[in-house]
Amino acid sequence: MASNNPYSRYQQIQVGTASQGSLILMVYDGAIRFSRQAKERMEAGDFEGKGIYINKAYSAISELRKSLNLEAGEEIAFSLERLYSFMGRQLTQANIRNDSRPIDLVIALLSDLREAWKQIIRNPKGGVLMGKR
Image 1: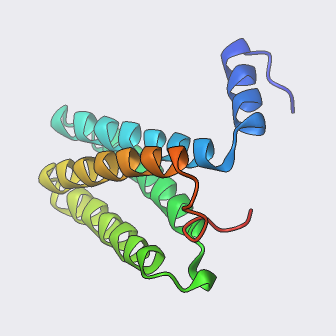
Image 2 (image 1 turned 90 degrees about the vertical axis):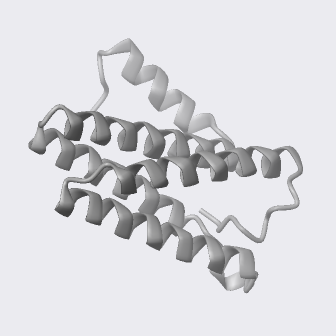
């Protein structure tokens, strides 16, 4: 179904025409944004909003896991998979304990990884990390 919202339409076009590397950066941006929003909702005492944004951040991190090319057998891909799993567990703990510290850790990790991906995209020898989509 086509959207009449110009911003939504712009986003659809941007995603539809983006390179694989750019899509990875978009997912990182979303995961970071959702994590920050979860923390804000937690600090505001909005438990429903906190849960919604933690789930969105978790889903974005799951997409990052799915993008890994584990079949190439590169240790970096397996390390990233373990790190993404760790982040998912941290978000779960933050939600259960209503503690923002695990979210801060996830935001820091995601931010560092996003910067690393930006460098990989500039030097596209990172093909072993990204799966075929």
